[in-house]
Image 1 (cartoon, helix red, strand yellow):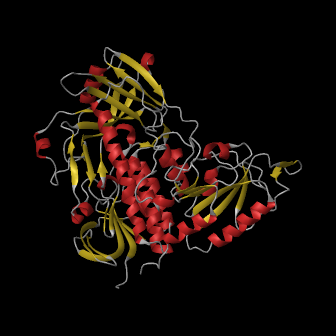
Image 2 (image 1 turned 45 degrees about the horizontal axis):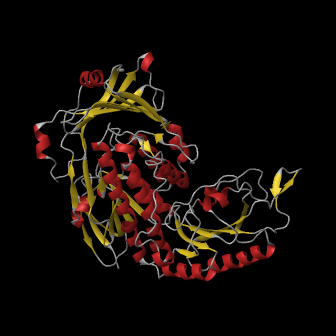
Image 3 (image 1 turned 90 degrees about the horizontal axis):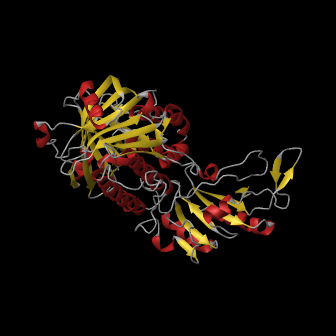
Length: 564
């Protein structure tokens, strides 16, 4: 076979493509990433970053710069003209992170710098034009900034190139759905609120006037990190070109080729739907925006994949779009890494579509329903509905090996099982450390992590050490963490450390102590319970009790000789 230009070509350098490329590199793949645009898109499209995406950023090592550049989104004020005004404060203190607001250009700047620090730069002005699928590689035609065409060969191609995806069209994947019949306008403005109607920093506003026979007249303001600035949106007057739609039939996203709206027009709508409107000024940009609801018929065709808006588009309600795409990338990257670098069977890659396509289908249904009923909801939604923390692959066909994901008796009520997000836990302690740990401190990285809760018994620990030695030979990157039950701690006054003199320091695994009982509670765990955490933070297998033979039977199914 001819030499590959890289293991994976990522097409599209928005947030999804940048995360995809960075995660592939972290999992050991050689990557090229291209974007047909000569420069990043300047408009602020996506803003909200969900708590789950911040967990992804933490694992990638970039949560801090994202948080430092952003603004916590603390709540929402809803005003319905002549009817109601209410405030919803978002309480997420029981999660590792709350929801963050960060303009998409800043997100892309941070992700681009992170990718560059890994040795990969975006090749701008390079367009994907076509591909030829082979049994062992994909040949791709690329058009450079000077118009010349070049051919590259890659083991895999991932299309992260948006709603009008050239990769999706080249794969002839259907993208069926429908569009909202009316357009919207976006703008970046400064808003000064009257003292009696001041909007707290970090709060969004949704003001509207409802109509029985027409869409609601609305004015929506999402806070930006710069003080006093908001990304505002409202309905737009239809234009003749709206009826024609786009060249590929997909009407979605910012319509940069169409004229935006004036500051006066934005102020007129705010004055019309609000009793005490803000004074708007300093309009930096405005643009028209179209919304469609579409889902790709397939996420994988041979050696090519779709992710993000190339695979699913829907209303922006709840800020799910960019975040859902980032979860796509986080899900696929570790699987490609296992196939390319650790000999996993390519069939593992089928689980990407099996897991992620149902998620997008549900997001499309939920955001569409919420958009249609905007302003008519009588009770606030589940406070975790838009966090993506509740997302589970439980019962999904193709999830690793569905017949052996949970071993043993029925799990206790409320216990996480295979397919669920592995909860974080605080208050874990480790010999020699004068500070507590989080469970995420131990699961962070590119390996699977086997967590086994054990009684504070030297014999039990020695047996687990032997198991860890055997598991280290299966070829799958895997670490073992032992968690002892609470009550196994002894304080060392002079050192200020916590120690367990009855347990020797282990070899080949990490030993921590559930001093506050947080792990036992979150996982409904008892001595002998075991949990295999995938690199994306989801449980791939559980054992109650830990069945060593059953786990060892699962792991080799991922192995076969590496490709190429």
